[in-house]
Length: 182
Ligand code: NI
Image (cartoon, rainbow, N blue to C red; front, top):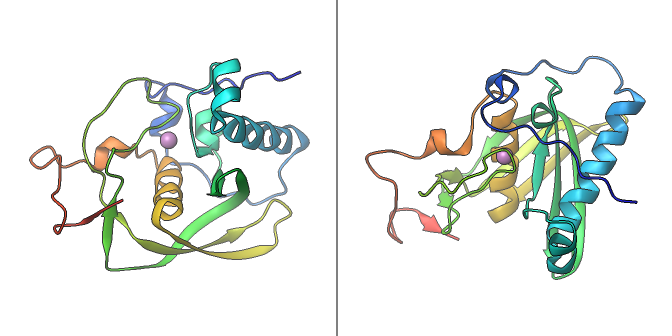
């Protein structure tokens, strides 16, 4: 039986809070939420399932979206059609980034933002992230293109930043050549 998560709306204070570093093991309830979150993200990216369960497609979630003010993110990335890879990161930190800037041509969305927000969100084309996995082993991930955008979007959530904060109101859209649109 699949039960949808309760994802908080952008109006909730949790979405604007800087989250705390995680210093202890996650508890069972938190681990269960991660499991459910990754499953929901995966289903949301499969058209038939998204329709069946009325899921808005999403690639990632951060703990504050579930009402937990801890630095934990999860991403389900479709690497190839039908092939998904899950990432869970505790205390994720961008330790290096490309100088090249990209943006999702269609703009970004967020499971906490239940409306359309137009505009390009400038992001690093490539980032290296360090953090801990679910068992607190150190991990280092190199992400590029849409996965890089997803990590930056989710890490922003841990600092109370929403994607549209990064849209320049004086320049909402870029041309090809100014930054690379993907
Ligand atoms: Ni989001």
